Image (tube, rainbow, N blue to C red; front, side):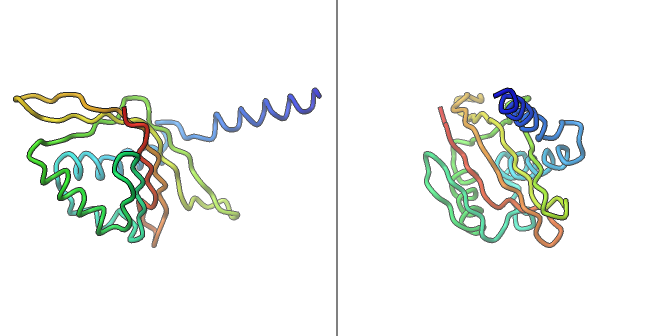
Length: 159
């Protein structure tokens, strides 16, 4: 029984330390990618870099909007539903909520990472930004041709 408790304890410790620190280079890379997707793309409608950081077979799962399948469909949905909306919407990452979990292959080479966190959404009307919903998200980023690509996205728990 004592061995089982020790194994469980060390297993939980490993899980707690499997995420990278916010000072880690990978974490800083994720911050930059997050800014390109949301700060530049979603908030500023500058989608010019989306082609280089989104996988062609992207799958985006949203608990309110359903599935968006493929890079072209995702870019079109941002253009039409976010950038084309007269009531402008913006997204802000909840401070301190982002976590990054590296994924290594059998040769101990980083091939992917999981980004998770919470974000708030705001809508601009009557001359000011008004808080809308908060949601959780999980993103699988995969290295394709030595570049990070957004591969799978889950956006859920909108409230």
